[in-house]
Image 1 (cartoon, one colour):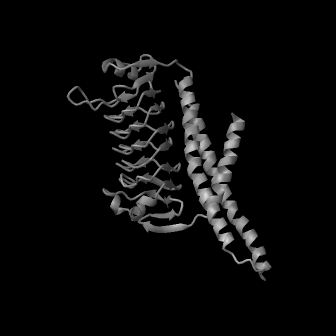
Image 2 (tube, one colour):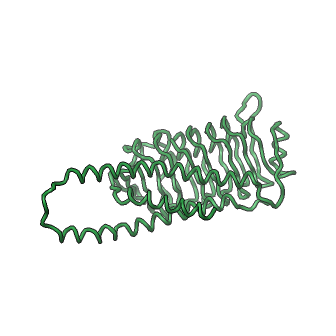
Image 3 (cartoon, one colour):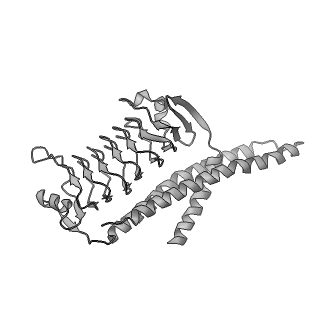
Length: 333
């Protein structure tokens, strides 16, 4: 396993550095206490200190004009909140989001209806507001790290491609309709024996917090088992003081799925970059030049510029590996 992870590390580093070296900023600006920039590869980077400004409409954010170009969002260290409706339904090309370790709260409908495909929710995010990731039609994998305390009202409702999810011990409350109408959800594992599950649905209002078809995994005598009995769901008990094999494998599968999803756009960017370089090379004049000194001085500059990019790439990869490792091996009882 260590060799496999090492190989993946090298592959990701090699593939990611080349496009990064040639990334250019196509738009940038400020909004109160934050700054933002959009690169030509579709990466929107948000930086600043404290709470990000919140709004009731996506159109109020300055990057709205570029919504069709945004493919990933990166929050840098320092920000504590994600503004409401900042990246919602119009961001249909958004596939990934990276939260910094300082993010503690995600506002209402922040990513509702967006094109997100995978998500790692770090343990520093204590609370989610209503509809945070609702109606994300492409969302397939969600990793919730230890530290997240509650799953809010309809936070993952109507995500049809979401098949399984593990709620760590830190999750003490799942609010009403949190996973309502997740038609593809087959398994939900709850590792907190006393997690409160809020349910308002009935036969006349069938928008259940946990969908009818989902199998509930939890400890014997837990609130998860009581919920399953009350609402006639399939319940599978997991053993005390052990990490369930299916949870461990599920964590690994989610990790490798995320790696694969991340590699594809990097490969596409690398291919496009190489094509551009080749095109530029073939259009250069073939006559001998008289500027060897200028060429000599450019090489050290290029490598000097690559050094911080290599460092940033390593930091991002290590964060991803640590996140996946923490999810797969978290204690269960």
